[in-house]
Image (tube, rainbow, N blue to C red):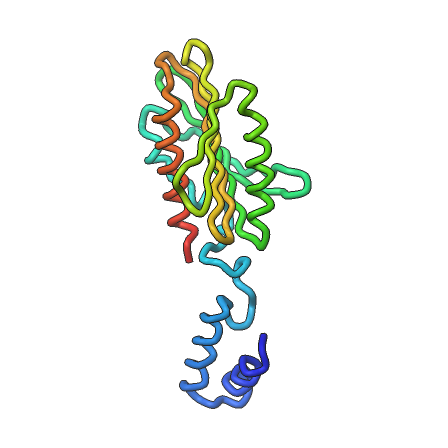
Length: 198
């Protein structure tokens, strides 16, 4: 908090200088991306949800992935822990799973760098890896079984103070299409990003 900000805050809150001082305080807070002097989620346009399940939107995935039968939260990672929402889905021809991990903090670049490195290495293990246009940077990786009936996908997104990761694992009697699932994951991730925006 700078000196001018401190003076206005004291004037507005302690001395009672009136509405004009409060308006100046609100303007200064907005300019500093703060809420009454408390730093907002890493100084960017996104805010951390109370639960990642609050921002899960299954509609972009399509009805053929199944209906949600259960949801739970899960924390992953060692140095960079992240909490996600796991949604189990039941379709007419198999069980599927969608996961959404969200982190709004001061170091999303480090999280994305770890993701980028991990999936860059995965190119040699049969995964298709490609950049995607979403946020500042995004990478999609997928592996489809030889018969096409099992798919594992992941989408990592970096955008200002947000790191988001969406994953889908599917089985069934119909072959999965990697490009189609990429577009569905991008839709689900984009919907979550809209919900996380301040």
